Image 1: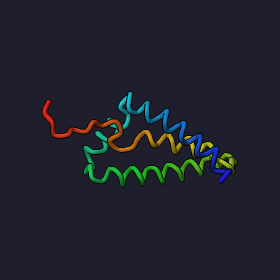
Image 2: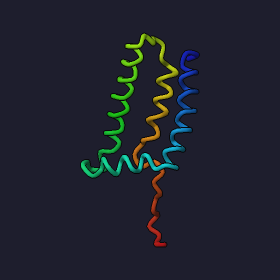
Image 3: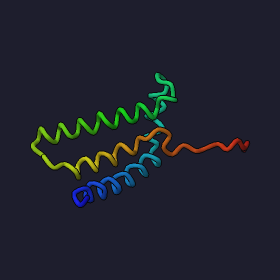
Length: 99
């Protein structure tokens, strides 16, 4: 468990930073608007999970190619980064009330 603490701290900090930036700059909303032109919105979570897995594996392979064997902090940073692109991040719920 002690070996995971740096990764968890890095992930939490980067997720907080990138998710706030995504909400302010509408990264997630723009990305999913483009994706949903070609894909049914009910598959958003599936696409995001597949992207996250492929992205994580790619980062691990790149770190391995550069000889970085213990890349926990780097992967924690990138896990936090792709939290910024969660489907519907920052979307406002309509409770059925007319304004």
